[in-house]
Length: 300
Image (cartoon, rainbow, N blue to C red):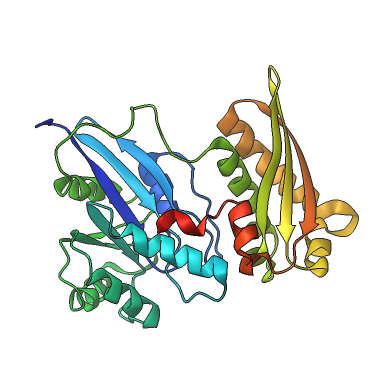
């Protein structure tokens, strides 16, 4: 066992939309997890890798813990809660407030069952006054005995270096789990699909996005171009019309927003073709949930 190099797993948990994916992208310096202002954006457990001379942190970004309303929701909550039992340190992301609602109380009950050290990460500190921060932190300290408390702004990368230092304190010594060139365990197709789904989330302000999945039908590589055929799955015929838009305008907008980020990641030009299909109530179908990349059995 290495006596100078540390390596371990750090889970990011919290209610939907507290900035878990934004923070993870910030810490590793590259966009892997998609972000949006809508809750429940992350659906799968995503692992990304941070490397330094001191050691390697494998970040586990989980779906937000929330009250499930369908089988997809059950799957997402199970993924998040299962992750707590497998890591060396837990980062609980919260927003700067002294109001601890039912969502946070549910997370507190889950955290009381774990043995790993818990770091309270108060995100979005750029949105409040410094004198208010201590009051908010104190409210959470009364709930759980935290190993550390680190206020950060994931959006502005404030204090994230301190967070890395605190995480390293609680990791065991040992060799790296991944080689230094590895950034994520996510397949390229999955990342491309998620980038497209992110743009749907950002373009459409209705409830539709919760019923949207994206599948990559094919990716064919040429010398400087990759041909991508992707299908956006929705639950209603009316949703399909909104996603396509008048004269195909909305679908074109989604494609034009997704294409540059896909090209940057793949370092190739992307010939992106988007289609829209209706699969009624797919979020309550075990078969379809698994078919679209969310496997309920992987956490049993």
